[in-house]
Amino acid sequence: MTSDIEKKEEIPEHIKLLSITDRYLVDLECLRDMFSAVMPVLQDQDKQRKAAVAEVFSRAKKTSENNENTEGDDQEASEEDKSQRIKLTNGGRAALSI
Image (cartoon, rainbow, N blue to C red):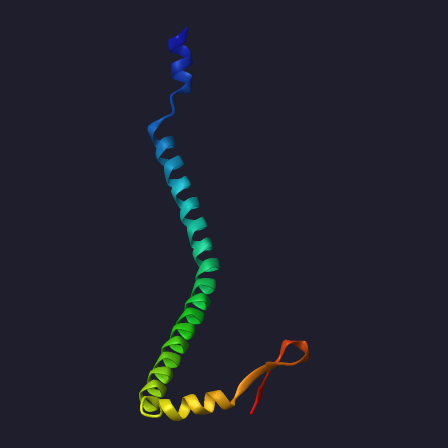
């Protein structure tokens, strides 16, 4: 009797092949859909990251240039800093007093 059950449960090779091919095509279609949905989001994030990195480098360059220009003026700058103090006004806004 078990041989009859085993014969009924055996799947022919061509059906196995068609089943595997069908699952592959479904998986491929799912991947294509995910790719088309995710890529625009990732590209936008890449653009934002590149812009942020460019801004960081430009700020660093400006700071570096400012530091090079003010190295000789340290004494003058420190006197100016002493005369200018930051006070907090209502609402937590900073105001510069001279």
